[in-house]
Each structure stands twice: as structure tokens, then as C-alpha cells.
Image (cartoon, rainbow, N blue to C red):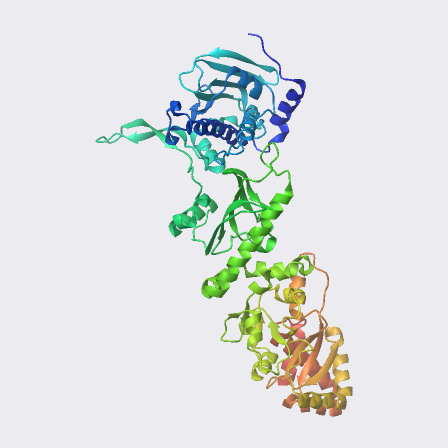
Length: 626
């Protein structure tokens, strides 16, 4: 029989198919099953108006058959089949799609939902096979035809016998090499996993025979091989069902099975959207962060399906970074895919879907915050840091998207609060939103300024997350109220009378304070008296936009610049230590120098900072004790 040749351009395309178009060789099975599904679709569509077909929907199926001994894998269907001319047209000319022609000729029928559009998926078989045979009998034909090819060298078509209508695609799997183990595609369990991964939601059953060894009943050590026919795919996607048809248990099972979690999700978001972007989505908010969530190894993204066929497991473009914790999938019939069905041709479609997905997540989280505070706080414990990064990242570009989802720990009943809730409780005389930053709530409560703020009846926000201060700098004033660090020099929670009193005290003792500042060198930029410390003797406050806590965070980062906060040593003007310092300045300035260093070290410890010279501190304490 004379071998027919592919056209010159088809030879080039076939070489591209095998070597460059597809990223993963395992994709071939998805493509062949998708083509088989299209063939079944065509016959099923015809059966709706042609009683002579004699098949109900439940009679259609796709079957995988493995002959490991002869390295053969067969993908069979009982669909429409192909005539000799159709084999010539569809398989002899690469990029000729019978499915696309069928769809175009039946545009008015909503039942039509074929997957193949490009006519190239079949040739992915040559990535794993060195010889491909297609035996097909078209509906209404008595005889069948066989198409065979070793690849780019050409193909043959001849008449043959086939008992039933449909198509068998028989792959002779390549021999294993040092680089590739092609035998994996002859392993029933490997094939089953690929069906589950890529073709789980093909609408017809995909079946395969499995042989297992079972103990013979009534014997101690006798076993026999038992063959069972298994359906490998789920067929009906959970997300294509109405929400009223799906139980919480089904959602939870699906989530844990697909996303390998041991705990039920906190929130399920199941929606169908029509309009500029038509798609179904099934999203989950996990109950806890994955172990690698805040590491560079974490990959965000939703699984992307087109007509129930998996295109990519993690499409990062579907989620903004601040919602990267969301798991789930999107299934759209509107996507314009490239010929390998692995990437999109037009990213504007994806942007439309991503925009609506983002709005849906935001609205569901807002609803949870309003209606199920306990669950939301559990969510925020796991992923609140990521939301704060959303405010801080990109120079605050996305802050409005997440600002009203933020919670902060508060002195009000020691609970989480929103900024809106904080502002709603502010006394009339309170001018700012007060916060303090530190490693823990307990350490913040030890700050002298914390006592002073709470003594005024003001609520205090506890910033214990390292990104908190950076986030609120991008967030800016809320409802006209600025965020003010109580450990900053511009913290203003004293009365006018108190301010005037301390101003006079500082002017009166300017020489004393300058002497102490000189004694401390570059450890502080100034020393002054204050009346904001209650019963505490001393504290440190920061000048400028960089606080001591921000300095600590920045210094802890790899390759961090040598940053340093500008600190001011504040001394309680109403504490006995103030008069002691005045006396020492008049009578014993050497001792005053030691007191200055001791008070600065004390203030650093109170503020949760390290003491730069512990040995000096120890010597000073011992000297004063003797």
C-alpha cells in the first residue's frame, strides 16, 4: 500500500507538536479523551432526532485498554466515527478540526459543547508513541477504515473490519530511554490518575479494566486474579450543579480531596457568572495557612478549566496577591486557548474573570466579617498578615480593596476591632487613632505610654504583626483621624495645661538635658522631660517616620540596609528621679553621666529593645549599689 505524505507545512507542524507545543507529555491522554468525548457528543446530538441510533445517553462511554506486554494503549469510543474521507481530512491535514466544523454548523443548538477546536490534539500522541493506529467506523457505514502512521514520514489508509460504530486509537508506546520512562503510560494506576487530573469532568464515563489479586475464600494462602471494570471519572462537575443540590459534606469532601487538606474550609464560595465573562467558580477559604504559605516556595492560583477539561492547575492571574490564600477553580467556556490548550490567546478574558472573582471574594469576606465574626477572626488569624501586605504592597495601590477587611488587636475588651469600630468609640476630645507596636500584647502593655493613654480613657491598638506599621502608613488617615504611635514624639494625648507645664520644665533645665544628651552620644537625638508617663520614670520615643519597632523589622531582613530610628529619651517630670537629676547636675556631673547611661538602658529594656552594652549596664548597677 502506498504511503501518503503529509503536506510540507504539516510535517513542520507535526515536528513542533512532538517537540515544543506541549509542555508535558502526559497531556496526550487529555487530548485523546477530549477528542473521544467530541465524537460521542456528535452521535449523542444526532440521537436526539434520529431514533435509529438506538442508544441512550447512558450507553455512551470512552474506554482505555492496556496491553503492557506489547506496549499498547488504546483509547476507544462509541461515538460518531469517521469515514475514509474524514480520516483523510481530519488526520491527513494537521490543524483541520472536524469538531470545529461540527460546532460551526450547529451554532444555534445550545446542546453543542465540543472541546476540540484546532485539530492538533490528536498528534500529541506522537510524543509518547512511535506508531499510531486509528480504526474507525462511521455511523451509517458498513465498513471501517484503518489510518496508520509512524509520524512525519506519512500515513496509510485502508479498509478494515470493525464490529461497532466508533473509533479506536491504538498507541504503540515508545521504548524507555535514560531521560524518559514511557512505560508509565502503560500503568493502569498512572493512567487513572491522569484521567482524574485532566478529564475527571468529561460528561461520559471513562472506563478501564483493573486486575487485582484477592484471597480465595476459605483458604489460607491461595489468591486469584479478579478483573473489575472501573469508571475513572466523576463526570458531573460539582460546580456545574445548583448550590441547592450540593450538601456541605460534598463541598468539604471535594475540597479535602482536591486540595489535600485535612480540615474543612472556613468558607465555600460557589457561583455562576454571566455577562462579559461567563464562567462557573468554586472557591474555598482554608481554615489554616499551608506550612509554606509565607515562603517563596508557595504558588498561588486557581485551577482553570475549559468546558470541564483542566487547562492549568494553578493560574496565578486569577487571584490578586492579597487573596492568594483562596483555593479553588474556575471553569469557562469563553476562553480563547492556544492550540495546545495550555495557555490563553487573549489575556483580557482572564482579566475580566479575575476582576469578578476578586469582587466575589471581597464581598463574601465582608459578609463573614459582618455576620459571623467568630469565623472571620479565625480566618484573620491565619491570613490577616496577607491582607495587610495587600495594603502595603505596590505603594498602597490596592489598599482600598482590603482596608475594610483589616482587624487589629485592641485594649477594648482585649478583642479584635476594625478601624471603623475604633473610631465609633472615640471620645470627643480624642484627636487620633493611637497604637503601639511590639512583639506581644503583654510587652506593649508594659510601656509607660500605654498606661498614660488608657488612663485618658483612650482605646489602644496593639500592632504585634511586623507589617502593621508599614501597612497603616500606606493606609493613611481614616475618617479624618490619623494613626499615631504612642511611642513617637508627636503623640499628643496631654492637656494644654500639661503641655505648657512640661514646656517650661524643659526650658528651665535645658543645660541639664543637653548634658545628658551629650553623655549618651549617638544613642539618642535629644533628652527631655514629659508628663505622659504616669508613675514610670523614663521611656524612649521615636522621631520621624521610622519607629524603633520598624527598625527592628528592617534589620531582621536579609540584606537589610543599616537603618536606625531617631530616639528621644523622655524623663517623667513628676517622678522623684527628675529632682535627683537636677541635683546631680548641680553637684556631681560625673555621677549624672552614669545616671544618663543607666536611664537610657532602662528605657531600652522597657521598650523591648536590646541593650547595646550589657557589661556597662551591669557595672553601673553594681557601682550604684555599693
